[in-house]
Image (cartoon, rainbow, N blue to C red):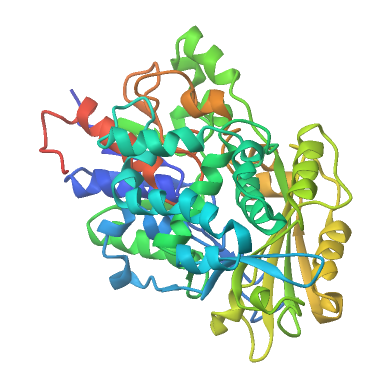
Length: 482
């Protein structure tokens, strides 16, 4: 039998594709990583989208899960050029009265600013933060696996599986409720849906343990560090080759796809069983996003001083406003006052813009596939809490859902999370299988954010898929690591 061209091929170079390729290469295999674009990175890319000298993160900009990732933390990425910058305030949530609630590194410091909800906040977050070092690996693993720390996971699960609306009832103040709601809105679902508390708790615990860092120079530095390490241990990369068919691939014993179910069906559906194809076809995608990048003449003039010192800003005022916004989008409408997520990296990383100038980006959620221009709505929301913001704008660049999907085909209809993350797809991601990374075809795996543990720049979907491929295909050839 003719020897295959490679032991393994990974298609797609987002954080999960890179993680999968690295783990396979670390185990002494010959690995080819293929990327459809000319530049590696998926959502970890940066570019001068507005004016020369202004570096913008095309997708994600703030990376709590990248810094916390159990796999990435094992890699010598600092030696390959990665440096994180940690804002003093991870996130701020401004209110119409000119104040703001904040997420600080300390649970107690955050709680002290919440008035009569100080103890309620400590009671909710401190046990989770204490358990965080032992439960994070379990949280970033397939949920159908037996956790290494079942009691700690159970304590987390009892809170995390509830809706954000329900769990926020622990608080009395509008400030605490809104702070929690802004975190939960990252779930891109109505706050009344089960599991939305999980996203809020993970983000808040990450802030209290690891922080919400910004990579110096742009998010592309994460990708560059991963690529540099991968090639330093012998990995090979081919860019500019968009895979639409298995026939385009060299021969290999295993192929791992950092793509969503829709693309996997298009590429390899003829290899799958009818049941597996039916399951993949039923996979659901969620809300999209409309994103703006700005080149600014100065820092955003937020009324609340804490917002000027925060890496991330959640703009939505109250839990009622945020809940209403997300509910309308879920029902296919674009609200007048959308919840806005904003990052201002240049406040902390002076390399992002010319001297005394700044960059910022923001997005709001929109119905999946919506191409409605939300520029006015987003800027109006920012101006509401930062009067004079519009006067600082030198240039802007926008992405609607179709433009985001063109940029990264994994963003189906603008969904940056790789699919709805509700209670059903928490356990059926992308289908209900004991090993969600395997397909019905031997040697073909899926390793994108459409598999556990889901969206985020952590690489753990790719890591777990590669571990499964190592056990299935290469167990007689190598000793597995870890």
